[in-house]
Length: 408
Image (spheres, rainbow, N blue to C red):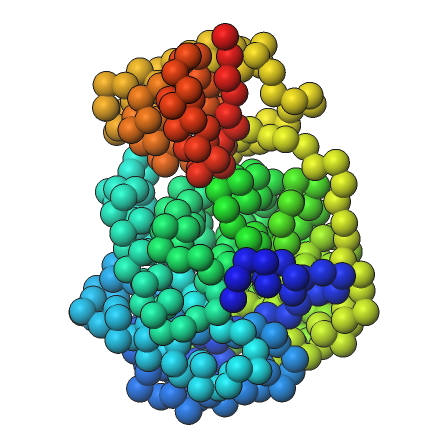
């Protein structure tokens, strides 16, 4: 599937994703504390039955059950040598169900490790881990890629960069937000939209989190800044534990579908379900929303961003604004760390920045190192007279979703 074909798919009415996989398989007997991907490979008929039901319900995109089939997560089960076989077998399993009737997305999620400075995983290690999985998914023939249930904007960026550098397929990206409406690392919904769409995501949004009622305000915050489609894949309400120790969700399909109308009104373009949802939920949301017209947003502002905040520019970015950003102590400190190739110091600095980053650096290699690692949307400012250097700086700004500004 091309990116243009993906854009054409989402025009005036919602597009429908599938619902939960893990919680449904648990009800069918999948034990706790097993590798879900390996268990599915060993019990393919249960997945076939579930995915066939999603197609019958009206889902247009199935997620292959490759959620945690990256080498970090598989290593927890001693299965790190099976990255390729598991991803390829699970994609083929879903394709055997779809039979070309619906699209198949290669599903990816967090590695479970935090990137420096929050953890010990380097940014490039994270990129390589996702590239490995993406190569397996694309070789197996997925139609598009899905990055979901992400907790960290920086790890999400690593996965998206890996996708851009490994494939031309459309990429859907969704993050998880807590009851305060921010991610585990404090990223706001609108910040996630600005950073990820400028970096090259084809759709961005929310999955898991809480129920659809709690998701509506998050979508409302995203929509005014979104130039691309918005995803909403909510849980079936809140989980509770029964006397038998089973997890149950407190929202039925009728109530779920009523809130789905609100999600479309808030600005969602792609609708599906996450934990606790079943094929009946997808059928219900299709019935309730299929005739709704998608919300359009005009006059989307140009924004810069740190990991936690966006900074709308009321006027086009000009030399005065660039100078003000470049002169900020945080930007100066970050640029100095980059020039000295003190990358850990740079990572530490930008993680806590309160103002956007301005990279006033003419060396293309150093500039790319900064843009690649910066968990926001920066300004690239060049004063160099050489046309070749200016061109390289402009190309790097475009590649990483930054704003390019040439000043005298």
